[in-house]
Amino acid sequence: MAISVPSILKERKYPFVFAFFLLLIFVTFLLISNSQSPPIPIATNLDQPDPFSPISNATATSSEFTNPPHSGISLSGDSAVFSTSGNATTAAESADDDSQVVDVEWELCKGSGAVDYIPCLDNWSAIKALPSRKRMEHRERHCPDPAPRCLVPLPQGYKAPVPWPKSKDMIWYSNVPHPKLVEYKKDQRWVVKSGDYFIFPGGGTQFKNGVKSYIESIKKMLPAIEFGKKTRVVLDVGCGVASFGGALLDLNVMTMSFAPKDEHEAQIQFALERGIPATLSVIGTQRLTFPDNSYDMIHCARCRVHWDGDGGKPLMELNRILRPGGYFIWSATPVYKKDEKHQNVWKSMVALTKSICWSEVAKKSGDPNDIGLVIYQKPISSSFYKNREENKPPLCDSSRPNNSWYLFQNFMIIYGQITIKARTLGDLPS
Image (cartoon, rainbow, N blue to C red; front, side, top):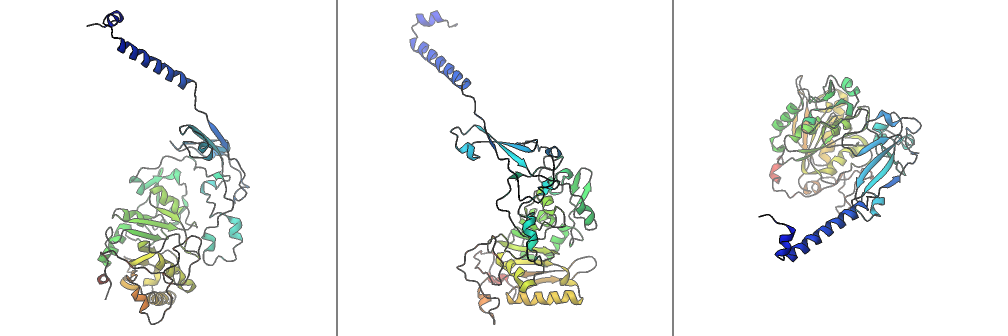
């Protein structure tokens, strides 16, 4: 039955009429208030010179760089505008409306090498002032103070990264445009350029038959290592393009890979673009930036670290971050080469590992079709240290702070007691 205004009035449906008009007034009020209250943009200019940039004297324009899709960053002139919402900046914190847009204008870092600029590793004034570089001091962090306030530009032609897990095997060439490593390591097949992509075939200095075959050989040498069960958190020293850590992901093992910023151009950039956890670091004079007893296993495949150098402090640093009962895998020429130079290093390593009660649980010498490696295990209990004939290296005070940033390495044993039931004294070799 049709409903009309006269019929409503005739039937005296006054509450319905009153509610209808009240709703109409409310909607009209909302429309008027929204049209008179537009969002207020806030702009902050942080355009300041960068006195600490080692490439500040060079010039570059932002036209060399392009925007990543959906990045929220737009490049204009010599600056970039970053848009965000809410309380992301100080300007936004002072505003009452959390939904308003904040525009922050950043100066782009200058110079032809700006896309690879890392302030704490490219602080050339601090590096030149170092009294020595013998222990890789020039590869350690030397952060400028105050910190530069410029935005590192994107490489020319940067694209949205290849999605995971495909990125583990291939990435866009334009995102990490550094081809030198392809030529430098072509015989070892670290990385291969194919059209618009970099391909990672799983090669490495010690991975003659590929990284997966290398990992299988470790599992056969020491079945007790049980990747993904007992061994789940790994540190890879001198990782190259992080193929070892990438392969371990398939075994439910999380690996932190690290290497210095050196002549192996952009190796960590390759790893990060692949989606593999990695960081820039070096075993020099300072402690690694990890807490005590962090890792189930530490791996070094021709990582070019002199573990017995400086009285053995580099190996003592590994002992600090290796968990009780954890493993150290060392794949290097002193393990299997018989000339005098390599054998002297091996003898030093034997004496040093014995002094800190590490057990040699597996070893194989290289042959023409394979490589040699040795696997050590850290004691599971501090009683092994206390039963030594000589207290050298000495035990560290267990009440010391568990700090690591910007502290020097020392020649003391950090120990802890493991309580995981899967690891018992029976796991140790007799």
